[in-house]
Image 1 (spheres, rainbow, N blue to C red):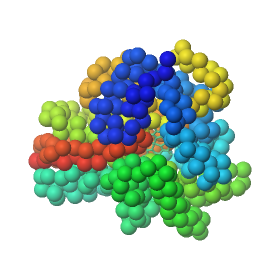
Image 2 (image 1 turned 90 degrees about the vertical axis):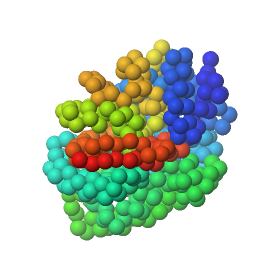
Image 3 (image 1 turned 30 degrees about the vertical axis):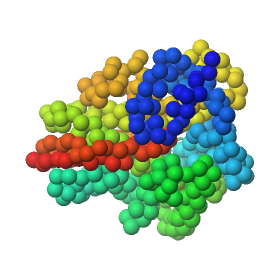
Image 4 (image 1 turned 120 degrees about the vertical axis):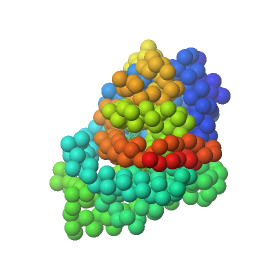
Length: 423
Ligand code: HEM
């Protein structure tokens, strides 16, 4: 039996993630009744919905069998994938980034940045990031008690951090923010390029335009950093060689684009979601102030809670068995991080925000060879912001209705209006 059409439509509908209870309820039913089953919709290639934590790990542990780049790495309708192939000369992904390549190419590309983002490598950035965090805390307190925390703090702080690390000048931050939102939040009329509800055709067209705009921007970046190399990440990318050759155009552009977009939107969404959780739980701020040693537990729980990356896709190259089901060569699979991070067999009370979890094997950064490259930086910058905020805030509560972005891919809260007092 396949997953019912109604349930399948619910979990792919961008609006279900804007009202998260809808997506959560659908996945709870799927985990209970059909934890690994196929969805068949007339406009999409059939895909397996992988809803359990253990099954996602098992798949991600076998990157030679479950590949990223053979099919679209995010859920797209069949027509859309065909048009992308037309635009790219046959590749199913518009952008050739780390998440859409496999094997030796992935290993070599990942190796360009990996040594520079380990916990030890980023430790020297701590003071600079704390300085940035303090600036944004002061900026927030300057609002005098009422602020839209998502718009005025959470979207801006991680943007400043990643752009500093990459080597993008501060004056280009608004441009980067706008293009990132267009890329990830195409289904949301408040954030996409046309400021309207888009048909699938219009969505693809606008994604292509955004990609071209990003490429035009980054073309000059290569020239700049080849002429004057620095230790910043964009410079490492511009000057990297594989087998003695610079990265080709698609590899270069894909690398710049993923670092500049995934490097802040995810962290911003997590930060905004954590503030929403705090503002709805008056005891949580006090608990954090009384137990500052729980800061890492708070950050980890906020990542699990928010799950800013809702899914990625894989495709099987050989027949195999996962979770007792027969997967066939060529099958497409949706790894639902949203679902896996609510798996009742892994967490007691998965729908509660708790800072007393001693074990929190959240899988919101993914797993295996593609596990998030920026995970340590993301954790560090969020920890620092909360350390700086917790000592300044006396109280926080919602000041109106929060609102989430309409998207089934990378998203989270876009408005978190809060009222706060300070010490
Ligand atoms: C990959 C989540 C922050 C850069 C990923 C993946 C997820 C993810 C789910 C795919 C993993 C997989 O396929 O197993 C997150 C979350 C973040 C975050 C939840 C923040 C809370 C960042 C930051 C950066 C970054 C700050 C930039 C420094 C990347 C890159 C990849 C990636 C380059 C591709 C890795 C690969 O395919 O080898 N991230 N991310 N991410 N992330 Fe993040």
